Length: 283
Image 1 (spheres, helix red, strand yellow):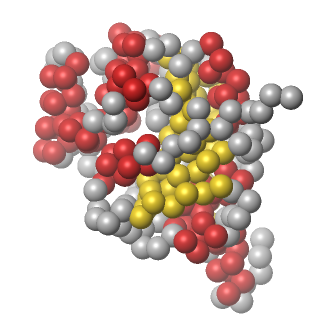
Image 2 (cartoon, helix red, strand yellow):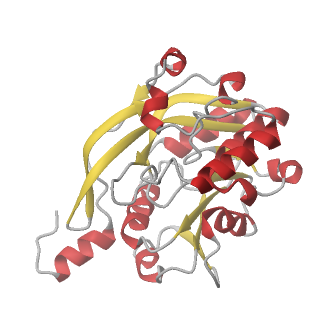
């Protein structure tokens, strides 16, 4: 029987062992088991204890000597890849159990696949993130429309390792928009496909999730201008993310998708251990 291809998961992290542990929990539940997990600690607090709670996972820890920020950390992780495929994931996002298996199956006729996501806000209780609200983020893959507003979410995307032979590393020069830059470059040279399943959970936390950054800052405007010049995109808006989604053009791009999440939190071994240590009762 032919062996399944190895998938290398690249995750940068910085001072978030609790959310990183939830990601590891979600990876431990994957139905696809041939995973190499590369966690790049961007000069943050130690993560060895959190990682050590998942001995069944093949985890490579890379400790950066200085804080290079998340794009540089991803690029450092690429140098450790052993798999035929690379899967990207932020340290505070989650993958539903069938995600990797589905992506590996879908990539057979193309070079890069990405899924839809559920975006969730949350409160943290006893080290566990519990969703307070959630909504589906699912849009048709339209390359021309993608040049005006990207609907590509990098967390959970899977692609062939050899893409980097032509595209090179992620571009640190467009820091806040490295993922938009990556999907535009990949789409120009390779076969890209959206998979209509919301099997990635994308964190939106008021106190530090993926989308809680200042969308209107001068630095973001500078990076957006660099992205525009690089790809000839013209004037691009720096509007609030939710304002953009409410525009007629974006509403017209909405697509049907399979919603799989039951809304239950991913209780990590890290959280369970701390609850026991504090005299609590494990869930």
